[in-house]
Length: 434
Image (cartoon, rainbow, N blue to C red):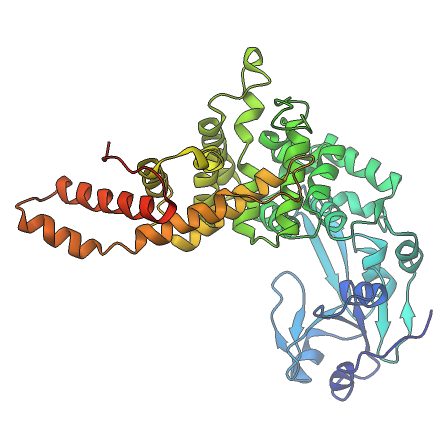
């Protein structure tokens, strides 16, 4: 045990605590404090209390599977110390025992990694029965006990922590255990919502590539996202992709999305933009003719399987379909640019189109030797959209109606004015509507 700064909000509980109860901060808040990372919400564990005593002290119950309460003043979570027992396959196959006789060591033993199994008492004392401080110093992700193998979500959590803590390695025995869990089929029992939740959180970490690389190393990626797993070993043309390997390229794109602080929608679009390259016919390699439409079809399956949110689905669909055209748009005349903007629904959804451009920039810069290049299509297409949206469509429609035109003819007139506006703004050829 070591001393540290006492968690000041604990005193609010102590004033109303059941007699002889022990109150401690646990998990990520303690870990991050020891790493010098500030700002994490705190989780508390209460040893030696009952649900009724918590209610009598003014706490509000929120737990469904086991007793968790909200502090009446701070609204932080306080959970009764509990142990757990595996009763069936998958994430939900557990029974929990929460009672005053459950010790702190028993509660910490059910946690995933040693670095998450450290507690801090109200007086600042650290309780670390499983060597979490040692593993923090060594920068190692290590499972607490063999019970790790009972919960397949922990595979995803370890991969997510690898993406968050870039300098940490996974203990060999933990990686071996993860592989055995995959081989035993435990991963196949994961529910889609939990898989998406962990993948989404991992995509938002500083090095998302590490999550997918670790999932691939333990075999879980092939079970959860075979569309992504099959990209490794697929070659691309070296003049466009000096890194050659499609899987390596995808990892570079994901890390570029983190470098550019992209939102989740963009990062998910990056993940799915090249899925079609995984099933390019062998005789076409290293070219990938038509991979965009194959990517769209594969994404549809991933979206349904993982129940991906609508905003992520829609952006990923546009990026998979149009990223090649966005990259080549410097060669387009004004009429082709209008058609591209229409396909991207940019006139109605300009904010989403900005995300399309950001995802395409991640793709272009996620290549060996291109990491620091300027992505020219972004400002050009942004300028084209501004010019086209400045067209007063109501005025154009009124003028068309005065000429006796209606229906498709009005749409053609609006399109032609947008072409002319883009041509004038960018100094390029216009030409008639096709």
